[in-house]
Image 1 (cartoon, helix red, strand yellow):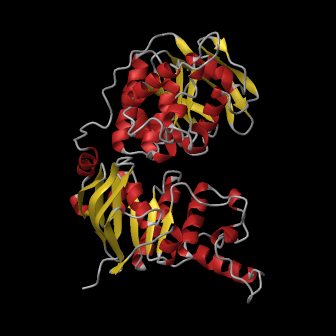
Image 2: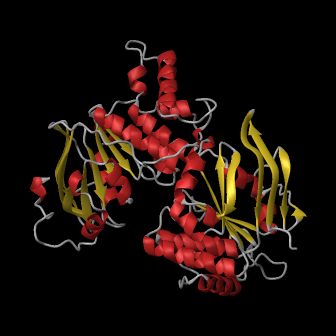
Image 3: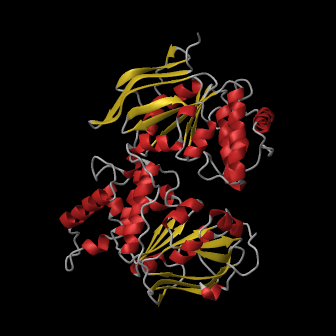
Amino acid sequence: MNAPMLEFEHITKRFFGITALEDVNLHLQHGHLLGLIGENGAGKSTLMNILGGLFPPDEGVMKLGGRAYTPATPRDATEQGVAFIHQELNLFTNLTIAENIFIDRFPTLGGTPLIRAPHIAEQTKALLDSINLHLAPNTLVETLAPGERQLVEIAKALHGDPQLIIFDEPTTSLTAKETQRLFDIIEQLKTSGKSIIYISHILGEVQKLADDIAVLRDGTLVGSGPAAEFEINRMIALMVGRDLNNMYPDHLSTIEPEEVLSVENISQSGIVKDISFSLRKGEVLGIFGLMGSGRTELARMIFGVDEYERGRIAVNGIPLPPQRPRDSIRRGMAFVTEDRRSEGLLMHVSLADNISLVSLPDFLRTVARFVKSSELLAAVKQMIKTLRIKTASEQFPVKSLSGGNQQKVIIGKWLMAKPAVLIMDEPTRGIDVGSKYEIYTTIGQLSRQGTGVLVISSEIEELMGVCDRILVMSRGELLTQFERHEFEQENILRAAFRQNDHNGNHQMKMSSL
């Protein structure tokens, strides 16, 4: 009988005395896809980093194809047939597709430093054709759409002819069409005999693709077996250690008539056109739209990050100058951006410094302008406790946290400033169901405290679960709105495709928002 493609035997790993993995035993067969799931901080990344040669296990052994596998570096892992396709793509956008694929191993002419350019172009074209990406090898990566960049990353991984490929949250930035294209490629890889580990918080994807499923919780393997044995409710229960009969907390908003945010006729050529709406105190307002609808760009204009040609924005009745985020913050606005790593966090800085970043002026002594360190630290610790951020110390760098806990740090940073308006762009993208529930709970608590919350999301179910009202955008225009009693997924999606009937049921003038 053939040995499994991959074997983890009694894998244990500790960091600073804290157990990240404990006695994990897991096998992956040749040509199979293993769906690896778990909450943020469950140990998935640690296990994959051990597999990828970033650090060794403290206890236990790994086997690859029945042989001992002890990679000392990521290059060792690559040379032994293990490839990673990360959530954060490792591409140089200023280089061509071919240059990215061959970046660490350019073929040269004999013993000279001269690069075999025709050979590189030929091999790149063959790789791209194999994944049905028909682009010229000399195409700059910066000109590619997110889905095309994802495919270039796959081509880069396939260049080394790996036998084991790890996909880490591969669909978070893809459209439905691009996602299906990726799934087709994954099926082709399996058919060709490749083994795959697929990590995702989108449990429907895991259920659809996987031959086997493994669930990690708090560093231990709490369930594994054939995918047919894992319905989504069972996956959730294993991940969080309890049943989540309802994915969303009870909706208990108390909306007051006072407008905390007013947006009037905001326009920017080619991006948004005559956008008008208001957000009331205690209201959770959603914005839904397909990719390219202008929803993220609108949020950035409201906060003052991006410019707009005309229009007016006011917080609590006070107009905001355009492109002045500092003034937006002073007036009580907060913004959880879509890209948490590059725009929301200082990755190498501690949790304490990240959380206190916005509210630091509130902890300065009036005369000497010294920081009230003890009061600030107490407030930070309370925020960590309130948001249930998993960390051994508030002094740990934020890069050491899981994605869900990093998102909580961003939210905590803004909550410390006690905002009147909180804008959240894709607040739960790439995080687990348990962390999602906690963020939804926080949104509900904020609304009951009088904060107006504007939520932008690609997930209709999410907006229906947390919002009092949903606005629908398409091609830079605000088309329609749905009150909570009108929420129906099909109707909201139809509106986003501009396929609403024109009988006036949901069509409206912008002045009525």
